[in-house]
Length: 75
Image (cartoon, rainbow, N blue to C red; front, side, top):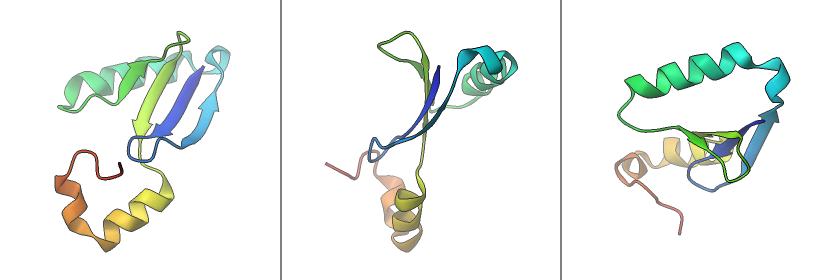
């Protein structure tokens, strides 16, 4: 299973079963190699976890752009 989780507040955004996403997995891993920040991780249960941003955190960051400079702004 591929889980999408907010990298700031840890809210699970959604998930996709493995059976329907073989090509998506390849694309995610390929994109992950080209970025400085790792956003695809293997979860504790053997699935993949995509670290992204939820709508609520995106709104907060849009309202306070200085949060972009802080790696983890929610404690």
